[in-house]
Figure 1 (cartoon, rainbow, N blue to C red):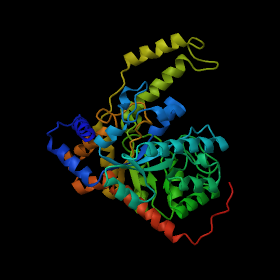
Figure 2: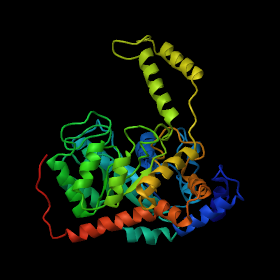
Figure 3: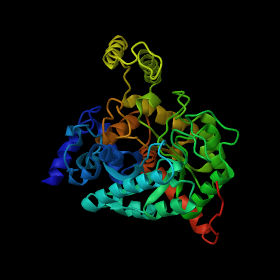
Figure 4: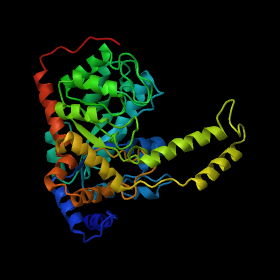
Length: 416
């Protein structure tokens, strides 16, 4: 009965294409051969945010869309979307630093490991690319983790190594703020975008077999990290800056370097990153919100939250939010593939880390629709297999090979 229910959901999971569309059928065949391996999903953070330790009592087989704060992920929809592997994000807000950040990271890791332990028929922890290849053939979701911010190691290489021992296979060098050793894309660049200790972090990640993730970092840090890394790097969830000039997206000159590095850029679904009109609307809305109520000393309606909310609602009614669609995401994939090559693209949706999604990509069940769109644009089935998971598997294998060649080295004693 469970498999019948999942099949029924799968037939409804690609609203952008009719159930009998030949491209959708081709997409499902592609994903049967190479299931989706998504580079970034924030399900654990959403569960922790909504339920805290009570998440253990939440039925993850139930429809996550029906929870008080709807989720973009649940177990039946993962299977409907033909997901065979997932790098689960282990995220801590950038304003939490020091030992508190380490503690919060461990609590997030505990959730991922707890999900796998509770649902052994649906998930299995993976440590290597070989594990992922084996697990995805069983119909389970091979589960790894990515730490989303270098500040979460509290300037400690031993902490980095312990995260790796618990199943973390990539770390994003920064989040939305600079840390002591690397620049974020969200703040003004510093004279040295990656310090000597930052270089030591990259070196140690190479040595232990952890992928260097350069989403969230400044272009200077992107280039510095690739110059130092002995292994291919990744953008776990970033789109193309040529299409949308957002600091979180990847410039073309960096994409050219990524091709030479052998890494992979995994496209992000965040509407403000993939739709230019949406990005401009979000900036205008933020400005309007500040104009109405900007604590502590300015704003039209300072100290009057009801009037401020009403003013923002009136602005939103007069300025409707521009739509962003599955097609916009496909445009970014087209561009990434054009500049970096089909061997260097992937999907890092950021689902459950974004408030809204492009139409047609509302949850983890919709990956077949995206693959069908690319097939309709002329992508080959082999290129779609690379995008779905082949490229990130190749990167992970390359990282493991570099690590194996560095095992005779002594860990760095560098300090920040």
